[in-house]
Amino acid sequence: MLRTVREQEQTISILVSNQPGVLSRVGNVFGRHGYNIKSLCVAETTNPEVSRITLTSESDPDFTEKIKKQLEKLVDVVEVSDLTGPSYIQREMMLIGVPVMKQEIHSDILRAIEMFGCRIVTMSPDYYVLEITGLQDETAAVLKYFQPFGVQEMNRTGSIALLRHLSKTMVS
Image 1: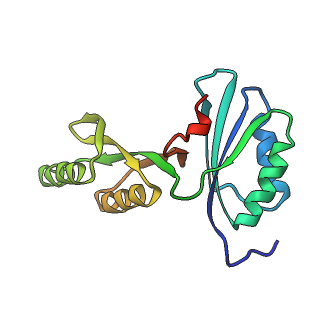
Image 2: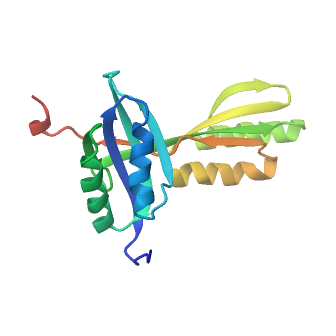
């Protein structure tokens, strides 16, 4: 499939019935159209019968509209929203494991933790697990900074997003 120059990262939120096989069917909609899902996060909402799938994909806005229409046809889909743009707030969380072998490295790591607003999740005398939450480019910058210290493990959630403000029409 030919890609267009207008491609940008698009974030889609899909509220679905919390049932087996739903995620597979959603993924198949993207696969049938030849697009890769860049990041994916799935969790129950405040209603345990409904889950929110938040995914990002490199695509143009026309493709996002086409995918939304295809997703809305799926039986288990409750609602599909495009969460791209300034009206939405996005974050991802990343955990990194960093070895701390020398005292001077320990001091440098502690300064960087404070500078980046990281949180120490667990620590031993020779290893820290750090939590970083922010925009995707912010977590990427933190990872890049810590790589010379010898990051041994890393895991990211992928983007999650919500509407920045609730409009009066949404409150009933």
